[in-house]
Image (cartoon, rainbow, N blue to C red; front, side, top):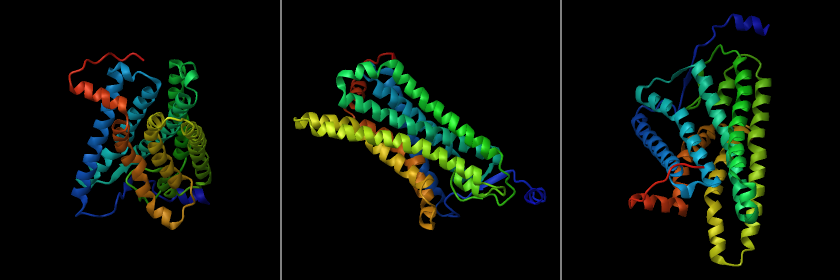
Length: 318
């Protein structure tokens, strides 16, 4: 019977992204605001990428992870913000079904990769602070590259599964997505086919890409905190904590909002706030990362000071 009903429907060819509603008086303000955010995000992350690539003082595992995080954040924000800016400028909110699926796939790939990359960064800080004598042996160049590759491959494989199941759904109307990008949950709600399998796959993969890396990250920081509190010197204790506090801020913002949006039960209050929480991990966190890591990182600030005074740069040689 369901198949007969679908045959009587016209399959949609595009979705309408409602964004932040019909606010003509605020469109120009929102366009300028998100344009500034996008420019700051891309410029800040590209600056970190260039610093790590060109200065030999930053050719360490910690900054290899940071280089990958900055590259990931640049792609992350470029996946959603340009389309949002076009919509605010022209008023065109339409996106093709294929384009929507591609945007969602790239978003999921990057989010999944970032989740495990942040976990690898916390493990790196754990080794540096809790097991400094074994750090060079454990966190060597080969193992560091393996962790980075595993982060990207896990995101690629996990979201390939989601894309396959999503492509099997039927969309025959309505076609309005109450979001500013093609987020998975609002898209699933528009399907006129059975979505139980899709919802199960999303929940399982969201759990796999958030809970294990979050637990590993929390375990690493509990060990780090315990080690720092045992350091007798206040100066050394502050220095040790400063090396991981920036990463802890990023982890809190990223995992906190991801869990709220994708894993908590969807009551009316949380459903209305989903777009607000989504702004944190798609827009604000990528913009904040360069400032968090540069303003609170002595080595990066030293490199910036050296560049400003005409210091020579070295070639990338990880």
